[in-house]
Length: 102
Image 1 (tube, helix red, strand yellow):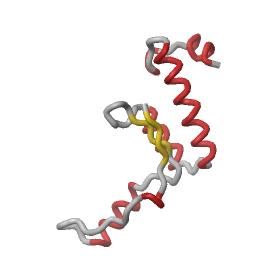
Image 2 (cartoon, rainbow, N blue to C red):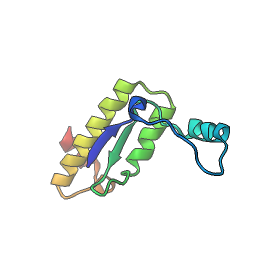
Image 3 (cartoon, rainbow, N blue to C red):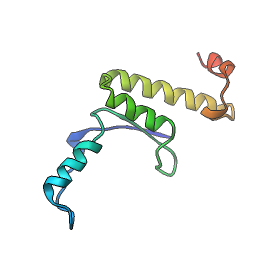
Image 4 (cartoon, helix red, strand yellow):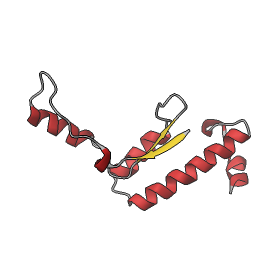
């Protein structure tokens, strides 16, 4: 798995899209924009890892501090690596597994 964080400085400006007026395009991207610093966890095929990606998105929409989201993301990544080493994934983990991680 790979962990990334959104950074508006690294995003190109959207140009034109055939059939969509620029004002509508700006409004569309304004509604869909991820908060700065939102973690993005991708699997080996570069697909978002669920349900974690959705959870990270909600944290960003709720205005959670960027440093807090980053700390959560690294903790989750360490948990996933721990579970993988035990042959488990997040959905199969028990409370005992989480306690062993701590």
